[in-house]
Image 1 (cartoon, rainbow, N blue to C red):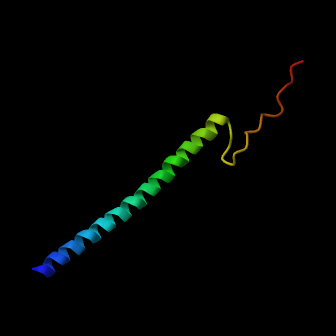
Image 2: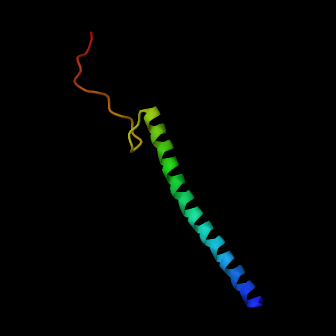
Image 3: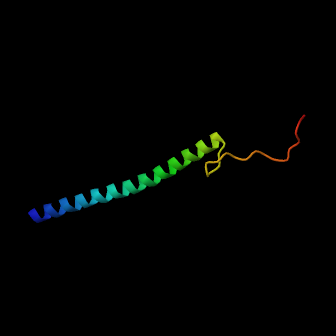
Length: 65
């Protein structure tokens, strides 16, 4: 009976470790997606492109005197 209990304990620990690994992989992917979206919103609010540079002003418009 001791061997059965030890086997069940090791299978339980293995299942917990696998759940933690999968949770960490999913959480890191979700974090990357969320922070990428927050970064894009910040760039949009400040008028910058994806390289972090300000968008160019339109050229060739008539000048008012």
